[in-house]
Length: 264
Image (cartoon, rainbow, N blue to C red; front, side):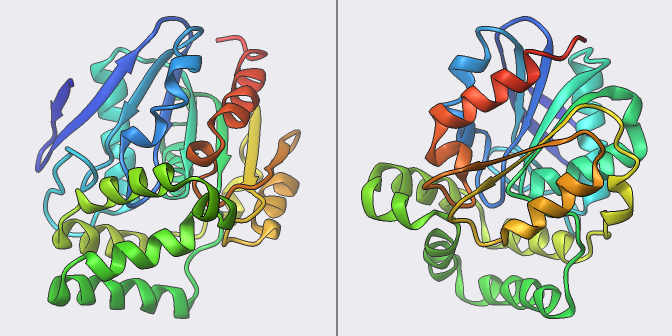
C-alpha cells in the first residue's frame, strides 16, 4: 500500500486500474476498504485512487483536529504525488465535506464531482455540540459504545436485517480507529464551514446520490441538486448512509454511467 509523508502525518492509499483518473473518498469512521466491492468494476475503466483520510484506517492523525482544510491539503498532495492533474472526485459523507473545501481551493483539478450521502449545510449548534460530546466520551470511555451506535444509525435497516456480513465489515473498519482518531476527526467536522454558497459555483458535471434509508433527509440531497446547475440526483433503494457499500452493484452502475460520459 503506497504511502505519503505529510508535515505531521503519513497517509496511505491504494491505486488500481488504468484510464481516466477517479478519486474515491470514504465516509467516517471507515477507510478505503469501504470501496472494496466497487473498485473492481471501476478499475476496469479508470485509474482509481482510494486513500485513507487522516485519522482513518492506516493513515496517521497528525496534530490536532482533522479539519476539512487539512484533508483538502492532503488530497492535493496525494494527487501531486500520483501526478494526477485532473480527476473525477467521489466523496461520501465526510468525503463530500472534503470535496467542497477542495473545490474552493483547487477547482482546476476537478473534472467532475460525485457527492454521495453528504450535505452542504454546516453543523447546527446542536449537532456541533453532539460531535464535541462524542469526542470527549470516546476519550473517556473508549470506542465500543460509539461503534455500535454508529452501526445502528449509518447502515440502512434493510442492510442491518439482511446483510450481516456488511455490518461486520463496517464494524471492523470502525474498530481500527483509536479514541484519539475519532475525537479529532469529530472535532474537525464540528468546525467545518457551510458550503451552501459554494454549490452555485460548481460548473463541472455533478452527480448527487442518496440512500433511501439514510439519516440525512432527502432534502439535503435535493438542495445540492437544485443549487448545482445541471446536476443529476439518484436515490439508491434499500440503502442507508453507506449506500456504496450496501448496494455496490447499483452504485457502481450509477458511477460508471456518469463518469463514462465525461471526457478528461
